[in-house]
Length: 171
Image (cartoon, rainbow, N blue to C red; front, side, top):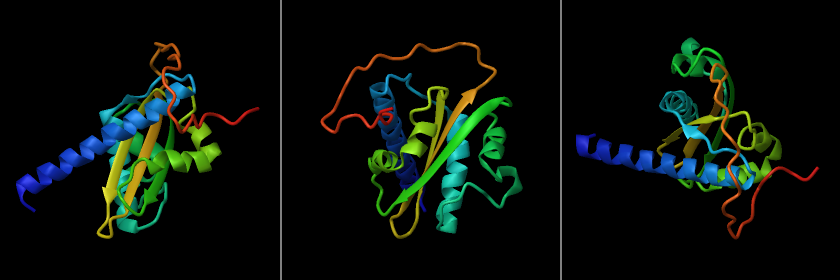
């Protein structure tokens, strides 16, 4: 591959990650939760697993490389923090359509509650990798640095779109 093509592909990947972050934070705001900060170390952890599952062709939270064997090991290897809590979501779609991530959370409420709508998480890492057939694998790593002492106030609900929120199920 030539350098120009690699540069274009990396630019597209970066743009998609920004759009995913914006989409995730839009839905957190609807749930009256603080927005997540995109963390470059967590992006590394997420990208490692996105590439691994793409090569494997199957979703798994495990990795044969012992340094990256599970989400905790990947976050440690990324130098995010030594004291943290983590949840990892992995999904794929037949085409590069990041908007389907929210549909996946709509259908899997428990997964959404553990990650997207979990108020303890403050940071996110996003990884994606596309195979030769066009299937894109997404890895979202939600974390909180437990050594951090600053608490962010909840953000006010500021926007509602025509789809409506996918917030927590009614109690």
